[in-house]
Image 1 (tube, rainbow, N blue to C red):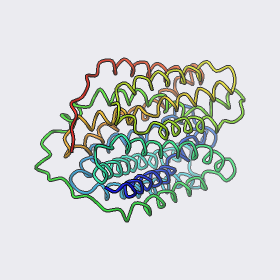
Image 2: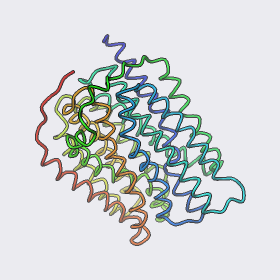
Image 3: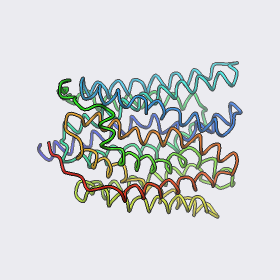
Image 4: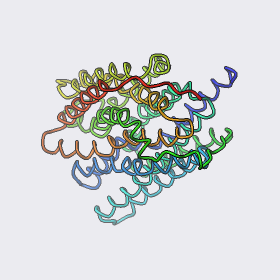
Length: 391
């Protein structure tokens, strides 16, 4: 592939994922605030409303991977973006006048479930599509760009979402969430599709694929706890301490995340993922510990930054190891299963951390994130080097 064509495809990939994922990002820090402030419900229900979208993403990953492998990764991606828009419309319906708070919460949760389905389809479709268009030898680069775009969207979308919510309310926020996927679809719609794999080649069961990649997935799951608790509760943590700049917690996280992706995005392809993941988990542990122990806003913001620096390369580092371990015809299926491990962290960390915050206060949720990162570091110690696959 000519260098200029490769660069244009990578640029289009990054920009499309960035705009699409703003639909998720603008709502993430607002949902728990909205549930507590407007519906008058507890922290754990706010955390559940955040985490439930990742539960439906988990359940959709197998289907999304099979859909992309056997039918069309492009159609998988576009369908996912449509579900993003439907989710925003359902969440908006939770504001019907005189709707009792429990029923409004139930409608909101339904919207979050649809959002999770959309995320499962969109990201598996977009990523596997570009594995085929660009080639597996640059899988680490592709994963780095996808992640950089996603967390860049968090860095921008978090403060924007909080500001829009503060100034214009939840309806304006959901309108933004509805419109952003249209920009992503516009950028992707003209890109060529790739031929589907033949069903006869899909000889290994999903459970068999998961057995090949469970250690890499477990590391990503444990890494994701830190981000999940930060995304759901850092704004409430700052407000509970009467600290300013509540929106900057996500900005610091996202800025650190994107900076590392820009500077070291090709590193997993060059040195392999295991060593890189080990170093990254140490940095994430330090960031979560700083948030847990922070005596002031500056240390807390530094903790959010270090968490972003540490989390940044773990997903592509482990993703490269997954791609090297599975045959070409199973890459979308394997990637769907691999990404589901991260969704597990996002689905369960927020409600568990919300219950922990109700009992022990907000700092305790970051101790949970630090402990998970240490466990992830222990898992990497048991990983053998992979046999490299090409093609």
